Length: 526
Image (cartoon, rainbow, N blue to C red; front, side, top):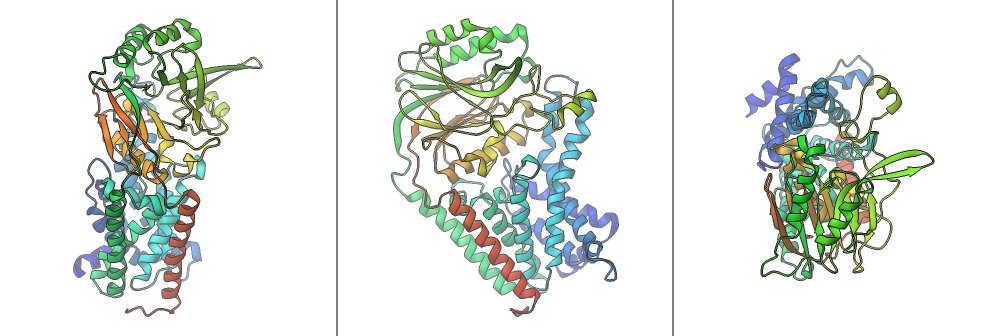
């Protein structure tokens, strides 16, 4: 191993960048659907060795000295995001070839921008670099900070945070209830980097001890959490999740509208068999293939389908006219058994370039348009609020990728009883994308202590309890509906503010360890 580490550390030029790119790409195997978390021990050990050798000209300025470290981290991030997000290219071909010109931007452009966060993390860590385990603490601190920044800078895109690689099963998701995904990311980087110390053994005992304690706490808390009785017992409420699996190419086809709508009604009204009648039916994101305000007969057909006391929650495009201007919203509508829209929630966090164009006037003057729009770009709601149901319960609405934002689950109004996540992952085909999306939804359920009802156009649809366990569901491209009981929400040990504070504590501990090593307060041979 010493010989291998030496070659990695002394690599330069194209070989160095290729090693960094490959190490980042390999780390993607720790994510869904592969869940081979052991690769993280290889990826981050290689990154540590590469940073050991990322030394700039000592006579250059401070920033130029950190340039090799930045580019090492950037190439690592570029590999990670290219391998983890290549499936975004599928969205460009879902409705034809109008956006084929954007293929390089989707496959390489977005990863190149996201890689900047990892480049800055590597540069920051290298600025505090020292011998022994202190440099692992520096890397954990810097990556934890970078993942947090990635959650909100430039509207945020925290997809595939490193911490998800340490949570392949509900047993290993429970720690996110305490420290959140950003805390998990920092801790995962530290533990995954420990094999780098086997070469010189400088600081190995201390790092192994801390890593062993962290792993034991992670697994032990998972067992304890799943063993707690009663927190998520069935409430007795039954929900039907409908998955129509409509191909994206025909979703907005005028000639296919009737077939799509009839399919939704048919799947919704199927005989429940010996099970209890569902009180709530959930359709996916933009399931209704037309504007309900332009087709009032559709509300009548929905009323005819619903039995007394039933409600329908459907994703739909909502149109609003104000001051002569027309706005379109990606929404969840609540429709009662009389065919009345009794509540609505609009999407707050829109997808850049997907649902709206940044610098819209400039972009449109260049002939560009968002991929998934109505006659104009979608508008975003100003805030999120829980949505009331006729039976007195409230749900938290999360539309599509809103579920990946840990800080996006806070909402005004009465406390939510469960989450409704509607999405349309048909854009991405049979790729890792929908599985990654689903894994992040599971972790949100654990973090919030709320069961989740997830309706996806072509999968993965499921009921998820507050422990992250799948109660029942439908895999990709299955055309069906599934009935399940909605569990009660779970009592949280730590709320969102507490998780944020504990994340700061984790960063502070790693920073203190780093600075102690850097300035000689701790022995470097411990």
